[in-house]
Image (tube, rainbow, N blue to C red; front, side):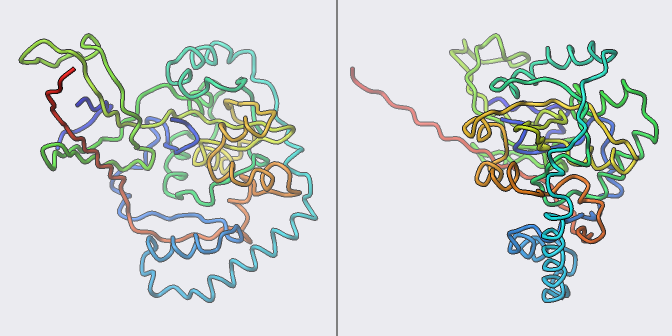
Length: 331
């Protein structure tokens, strides 16, 4: 079994998850607990209550009735925004990428990770207006946002901003690997973007550094690792939905940066939308792409909508196991 883990310590797609770029990690010393910023008022209410029960520090002491009152008030506020900001998602001042960044864009387009992630729909690059990007993710981790904001600095030059939004480097977050049985392995990582990729058949020459006790016929690899880390969006008509890069978008917005380099996929039909967006969006695309006022990036900064929770520290753990059956059959 082959496990592909960048920078590990022994012991597909882009819209499925998200991580922050290399060099932008929150130090382990402040990961004792996190602060999670939630958007109230977004259904389903039960998802918020489950999060509080399972994750929030001293969850038993939370006044659920008061929390539901806050959620209800935010939900009413969203109904007000449907009138006062009707059509705002159609009014983003998205623009072309600066010609001086064409070389960097070409590097990204030539990278294997880009090929694997964006091999279906028409795809390009642009400068997106952060405030008016539609969102489907209801929460971000405040610690991460502050950490990457502080590392980027208040006034990044265009090239630094581009590499921040569309990095090509491998992640630095360590992964702990444990053999917990004859055919079972567990992986633990601080990054919520860590995930199982896919099973893959490899030729012997593709496996380097392994010394077999006999000739190799083939290798079945169970690949685990991280997602691509490109800030990306999906265009449907005049609207753009943020697909990946929520923490970076919030960090940039809090620094006063209004536009950011982004990979943009264009979908023109319902079937195309379903293969480009997250499953929660594909189940209800009308809400995001046709409603008068869908949730936007700027909502994370609206005190009438956002609520900060103190949460317990969590890590991602993945367990993989495999079976071997050896038969002698007659032909």
